[in-house]
Length: 369
Image (cartoon, rainbow, N blue to C red; front, top):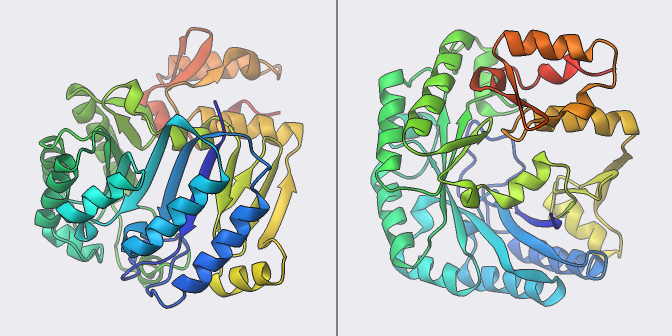
């Protein structure tokens, strides 16, 4: 698999109370960010041969003007080689999508859209601080289909205190009415420093109890698989293998990727580095001719091994059995977890079951040295 290319667009209309990603609710710094991005692109111009995925994430990339988006894409296409079949994705807020804008996004090179839907339930959207309605979502999907998009992903959130099982399944039903090629169903977590985190610290109940949230997770998997979607990663479902998110798979399969923009991360197979989490500091560093790197680490063999387990147990691809037999107790652990219905053996790999996905974060510890 070829490396992936990521560009971080740290701008939004408003900051959602659950969001832990770096973003600012303003367009004022866009000009400086764009200048910095162009300088960073020039630095990496000849360091990667080819990419087969490009992902504009954020923030809300669709919040940018059409003129700025065209500049960004032109610069990326001019200085990096993307394969003819590259997956080229932009994250979008449903409110930003009109028929005209959908057509423009298609014309400047995007062939995949990831819509930040979160819910088809207006009270839930209000609780999440979203600035769009369920009707906005439905209109946006129709516009995208009319513009010719044949690969649409929807991001949804579950596990909220205000969301019953019935309401969540209803959101899934409304999503499936549009036959999206991809669904990401994220369980709400309290990211440090977010508004929801601060409210939770004051004893407000934001998320569901662990057992109830697990029941929502299992019901999600069963419902979507019964409707033709493959549960190929803890939070991700695709309507066939060809619609699995190619770019995101690179993160899960330890494939190199280059990240551009404030707070973006990069990985070359052994070394990981990350950019400054500030538009101001990012642009200032690049203007002085410096890379905006905040930190880096070279992963040891053991770290790479543990990461391969952590990432592998998050996907239906699982982990090669040879990797799991490095310690004397690993065979016992494998048999134990298979007996418990958390892992299954398929084609020489240990593959997590749906219940195993629930323990994806702790499973690697059972096989580490």
